[in-house]
Length: 302
Image 1 (cartoon, rainbow, N blue to C red):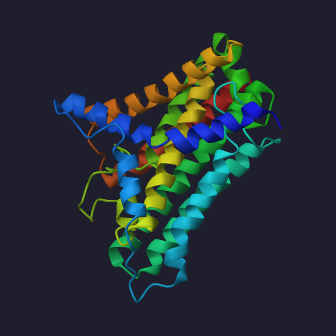
Image 2: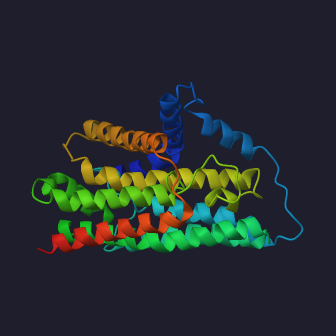
């Protein structure tokens, strides 16, 4: 195990809450506001971890275990994702299948905890979450399979670096379609506009936020931190496609970190210039992402 393989995991653990901060500051800039501090989520996590949790008498151990198990799943997924030219802590052939499965497992535990409350609102949000994820996951898997085929490698630690190295010169349209599909999946999986509004407080339109209404204290801190980690990991896939390796570790790290924050800025711009889609149109967007990934896969066969 190489020492540099710990870098992606350590950076994800330390810096993932920065991405929502960059998104919020970008949105505030577009709105002409000062916006929250860049480190606001760190303050929120510290405050939540020092609070107590209140549990309904109708909930069981599933409600309490859901946030912890979800965070454990995404932490395991973080060990599989490289960051630019830095390999992941764990790498093996077809590890991208395990990565997608771990993200699905995180969602499964969150949905179970929401259903355990017996709330009709949380059940409605859980139903929407499962339905939309069933459309987003195929797009993610086909996009990663396309990258694996073009790179000739089936491990995330090698296929992303090989794609960014020189494939854009002769496979530009294929990789562009994959990148668009991954960006749509990133927005959907992280409950961002145009799929969901993370700042809304209207239960009838919420998807992810309505599932965690009854969580508080450390449990809610686990959910917030896990969501930031998932945003970081999906952004790392997009950055890994674009940022090539230069051979200089310091420069590579600077380019990768610039790419990560650039993805956050793009998400903030999208949320600033677009409105949330009607719920009936969200499946069309996700099916479109799957169609783009499938088209890229077919184009890559030629």
